[in-house]
Length: 555
Image 1 (cartoon, rainbow, N blue to C red):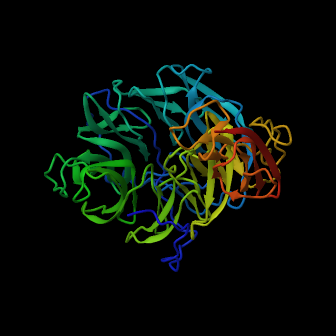
Image 2 (image 1 turned 90 degrees about the vertical axis):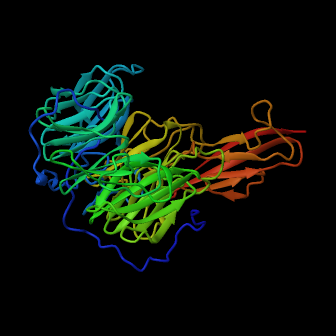
Image 3 (image 1 turned 30 degrees about the horizontal axis):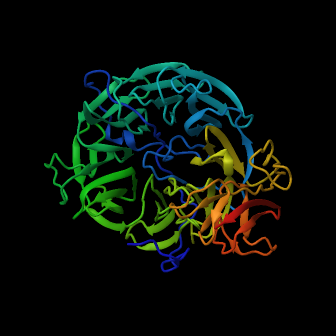
């Protein structure tokens, strides 16, 4: 099913979301982790150990926020109508996402610029933007940390898992034999649940978060995603090569798999019907007795979003698309948000019916990176996501209307949206940014050197800096830089602009009039000679900046 051409589909908009839901999901963590180090332990978690604890709206302790991977910060409000930089880290070596608890951001990265083999975990005080501690970890590539009850759990690329004291940064325990191919873990009520995939085998495990002692480990193949944990059950995604829904005795099935959290016993597994080679993308999301998932299939290649009964493992609904579905899903008050075709699409979580869709303008231009949107982060007032256009976008959760965005331009592509205590946190090419609504703490535009502009490249507070690039749209064309052929299409792309850009205006003929709008434009020139194109950008606060480039058109 193709993505609708319209920006917003109001066919089901009469169904109002229930705002300010009381009850929060379990606190957990997600990070790239590993597998076991010791033989199977005898201790087993009680079934109610996955019930979780209430999550404060000031915290975001894992990529999916809670053990269910809902990505929904209930009862919280982040910046929704405008975005301004409150502060950014002085470090520029964060190599993974961040988690937050108790006013402290925990982030992983290199411990010296350019040294990919020297890794470190850091704790940063949000109020002061100061580092509390840094702990060196000697293996390659740490993943996103998880936080619970004074313990920070972080894994690395080679299958090692570390438990670190959140107050001091001291390493308390290590776990894992050092094999590659692991996935984010869930940390729930003192137990770490994780999956791994490697040449030496695949499986799922549980370890004690305070001591690193293994509780259980079960070999199971093939698993290709991280965990979600709810009501005494651990859910993970995998792949299958046949087409039928499985039974409890079918050991080859692993589309989405459910395990008992107390001992790792498999309860059921599911694969979308009539789809060969179904591979789960992202992580399962669990809410209201349903397991939501994204998947990709072959023969033909399609992307899926669907729901499974959490108790029985039987499919409830699924939607099929010709375009990318990637990353984690989000569920908030009966609405499922999925990253589809570079934007966000909203479904009724119970039935799969469309609610609305938002696609980034100019997504189809070949000049833009054709990346799927990131995992959405949702509050009661906004949906946040990033994509290949080097901007973070804010949508209305009720209608999908685009409210505002912030462009990072040549600073890089933003990733890992986290909303905590009214602030949006994300990292951009190794640097941590905190975005607010432009209040007294905002220092937007300070130290900006992103491109040239009519103000010499400096953005004032709340200002914008225009920047764009040109490219040949016909791959058969060649020639010197900034030289194009008569009649051949040229693309102009404004992803190098920086700041809270609200509008883009293109003068493609050099006569001072607006010929096109949006982040991208194209033009073909029928006469040779010197040409110029001007981009004018407007901020949501009324600031304006322009950038002009000249080029040559030849026969």
